[in-house]
Amino acid sequence: MAEPRSHWGSRFGFIVAASGSAVGLGNIWKFPYITGTNGGGWFVLIYLACILLVGLPILAAEIMIGRSSQKQPVVAFEVLQGRRTGWSVLGWMGIVAAFVIASFYIVVAGWTMDYTVKHLVDFSKPVRAEALERSLTYQANASFETLRDDLIEERSADLAAPMVASIENRLPPSTWTRFNDFNRAVEFDGGGGRSGRPEPVEPGIRRANLLIDPALAAAVASVEALQPELDEARATALSEATAAVDAMDPDEVRLEATTLYRHRLIGDRMAGTFTELLEDGWTSTFWAVLFMILTMAIVASGVGRGIELACRILMPVLIMMMVGMVLYAATLPSFGEALAFVFKPDANALKPSGVLEALGHAFFSLGIGLGALITYGSYQKSKGTLFGESAWIAGLDTGIALLACMMMFPIIFAFGQDPGAGPGLVFISMPLAFAEIGSGGIVLGAVFFCLLSFAAITSAISLLEVCTSYLIDRWEWSRLRSTLVIGLMITLVGALVAFSSGDGFLFSSWSSGFGMNFFDTLDFIASNWLLPLGGLLIAVYAGWFLPKRLRDAEVASGSPLAYGLWLFLIRFVAPSLVLVVLAQKIGLFDANEALYTLWH
Ligand code: TRP
Image 1 (cartoon, rainbow, N blue to C red):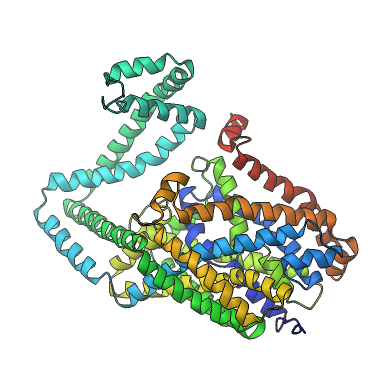
Image 2: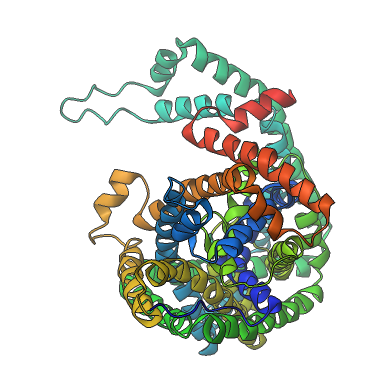
């Protein structure tokens, strides 16, 4: 005899748990760095549009499917259709995706725990001391010319970047690809006369040999036509920077150049620290296992007394820590600059492929596409208020992603770091800033990484729950047994992930064979294929196949206008947008090129 189905304590409990699933590393680690690499502004607006037009409707659809079936995804479609149908594949895909995501998620989550402890023990103390000593030596000894040149170089590079980008954007991406291919071929000597290779020839001859191809020649000609303007932009940047630095008080120049020098020293050391962790499979595994044990303990304690309780405690603490960090960030002079970066649209910085990245990330961030919210929805009794709940979850998720930007970018800018630094933003640029802040920075750093671990654990719970609930619902295993078995399996794959960034282990041949390491392969498969595909199928199912009577029952108490709007989005808008993204991935067209053509 199966146990009676567990349920959330209240509607609030459901919302907290579902927001816990949504708010995770995706919001605080990934969103700020992809916002940074895509130049902020437009990217954020497009992300918001993706959430509203695609994410929110699918999120509501998942809850609807879960609530009306009261089963986890594989079983849910059988219950709703009244028999076994092909739709159950959706449930299986979801389990695979959840498993795959969980196995790399716990590794990154482990790093956040590692960094929490690192800050608690003030790991950067020797780094700071050494950097201080060396920068003081620089300040004391470097000639004024050296200091001045260093500062000018840095400033003119910053000034030139946006100008250069806007000029380069005038050519279609395909031209740049050809031009880069050409350049590489000109520079490469063909292997340098090793056995069986042709004798190298002069670069000039290589150039001439390549230019007989009209496509290459055209690309090279159009890039070369831009050259005078590019040179001019760089020269302008250089003279502006020179003028600005020469207008400064010499003492100021000396101080600023010294600060710059110190940032570089600490930055190098922080990058080294992170690389060391990345390549140290054992330490990464240790933290991943610890993180997984905590996650399993919560899931094994049940829906109400485990998942809901943990989220009810961790989510408010997370939000409070975040608000505290944002208040600190608001005291920095760079706060305004950061706000402008995040919210002011700059057309030059956005690449159309950023649009696709925004949609993919909307799925990951909301935690949709693999049935996590079908599972969570199935623990909900009450009907009605579906759209209100969905709006709360999506709103919290988006709000926290934006708060994460407002807490990180002011700090990033205040310490002269690059917002487009990529994945290292959290693990390199932020620790650098905390080190620069000094002893108060240790507290900020510990809070920051602790907050990340909290966000990660409430999300990992939902990934684990998707898999365990299958064994509970279908095979009628006990919750404890299912959690142990699945948790152990995820941990094993997680350990492989933890070792995959180093070399010399099992996975060096993986990297060369797949063109990316094991970690990135899993991320790629799950985030690029399984989630969008799952989301597409869920939209199609909820919009076209879910029996109307069940659909109506779920939204009976809601406003008919919202229902109509939802139905329109889920039937037409969401599926077509996801299809566009998938078509680009299959390589049916190149979004960068297509949008360039549209705009010009
Ligand atoms: N949403 C989480 C994040 O932003 C990750 C996550 C949890 C997730 N559950 C999910 C992603 C289900 C996709 C599907 O970090």
